[in-house]
Image: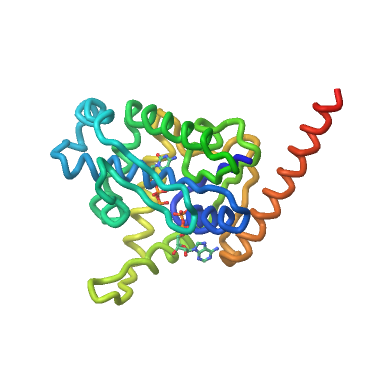
Length: 236
Ligand SMILES: Nc1ncnc2c1ncn2[C@@H]1O[C@H](COP(=O)(O)OP(=O)(O)O)[C@@H](O)[C@H]1O
Ligand SMILES: Nc1ccn([C@H]2C[C@H](O)[C@@H](COP(=O)(O)OP(=O)(O)O)O2)c(=O)n1
């Protein structure tokens, strides 16, 4: 069972994918974390991330390794734990430019396909181009959306100062999200886009629990359809 979950930032892809995978005993892959890890490695290794040819030349160098346990997501670059540093503002600001470079995409896409092919019990893969490019034959494709306001409110709720106090800056968050959406949707190589055969779920008015329940139902329906197809094929 291969499930592709795509959509822009703050629509609930990571939270939903992790919960669905955990509930159904599937593996989980956060492809945004892979692009973030590549970006972090470049920033810490002196690569000029405003220069596409420098990014392309360096894209084959770091070993990016993802864990696929939804209960304990993990990511490393050249053996260094990247799960903390990939969430910094510096990485978030640079990740769209790095992930727009075709050499970066082809390397990471290959990695994603290898991980999906090796996930024997099935996998939930979340990102921007999973249904359109990485796994076009996925058994189920979901495209999550939400209003710009809801997405910004969710994301700014995550911003904390050094003492752990929430520091909501709604307008700035909304603007940064809009900029990243535009960059991710307008790039030439494999842009953020709903696949024609994806099921669109607008999460604006739904709680996370409702979204999880909805996607679990969609996965169960897709699994039943697949079993029926396989049974029919076996009877011929
Ligand atoms: N349906 C929802 N309602 C309210 N908050 C949500 C919902 N889905 C996710 N969130 C919260 O919004 C934030 C962003 O969710 P996340 O899963 O990281 O989105 P994405 O992976 O699409 O960027 C998280 O803090 C998460 O807990
Ligand atoms: N399949 C993917 C996943 C992410 N990316 C790029 C574009 C995104 O802005 C960044 C970061 O993705 P991530 O899913 O971590 O972003 P959010 O957590 O939703 O803010 O990576 C991509 O180009 N293709």
